[in-house]
Image (cartoon, rainbow, N blue to C red):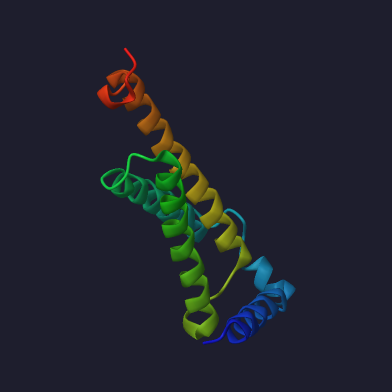
Length: 128
């Protein structure tokens, strides 16, 4: 697929989402049960991806990017799947995916930071 094809598909997907009826928004409350599931799934994926990345790299920015990319990719893939007729695509679902991803990354980073503080400086850093 060329870059033009991908952009065309994205524009079509955005148009389909924006073209949804007001009635569909009424059936898609901001605080519905499915929004909690989107939030929890994204937060969990981000936390697990951060932990997995910590097994591979000591670089915290890389861990953060990996965690966010994994969780957001899952949310976007789910909404694209819904756009193909397998569900109801929703910007509100995607919004909760972003909020959950952010929360999961912050929780994982906070735990990582706290563990690093408890351990003290690493021998490789040369500080005492």
